[in-house]
Length: 305
Image 1 (cartoon, rainbow, N blue to C red):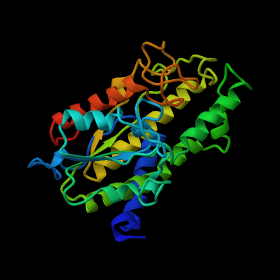
Image 2: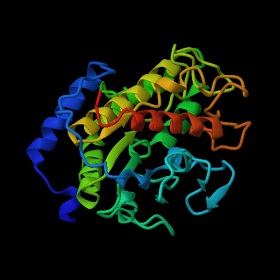
Image 3: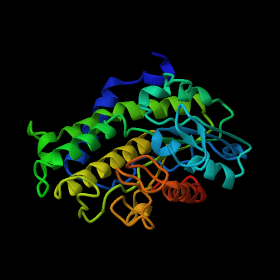
């Protein structure tokens, strides 16, 4: 493997994995930065040369207009909105539905390795990745299937915790070195860039309530899946801080607009979408909300919180 991708100290990775594991196991959902707040890159107009990396939450599958059939990418996804508002002088969106961290280095159909879009002139990079590494689609399908066995209980939580250890928490912890490698590679290939790690939005009611059968999860699994999403975002925040990147919270700004809400309120579509969007994905309003979060983060400068 190339030095700019997956080299580095194994001991450092183990320490980071242990730290994240401790945080996830303790259900900590916020974390203070331990990284100095010195600016990394940016400035001198560089951030008008923008590259977007990511998965389907970035790409915007089924949201009009679709501009890349291979990746189900929309020209109304959040990177396109950010590029327009920031008046980017150069903009390349290589996000692709179904992408994992491996696709930063490996082609995905006609989509070249996403990291290949970066160069020394890149001034702004957004990265939203990790959901497919923990098996997002498989989790949704499994929990929906199990719900019929015990619609008022928590069959999904019991399934993933049957060994005595929650396997989704383990999957998130195992994704730490993958995100770390991506961010180190981004810094190597785009050394002057301002790098933003974009978290995932709120998919389910933040209060833990459910909406079975319109969203077919068992009643007590809604809180379990909500907490899994928060743990994923916590991991992304921690790794961003370790790797001199900035974290963009899209969960907080989307609370109250989850897939259980009425069609005119929700920004995340349920498993049977009413608006153009993939199941369990942001619709156009959801992409706009994530764009606002990214723009707000950019407007604060390089401080980290």
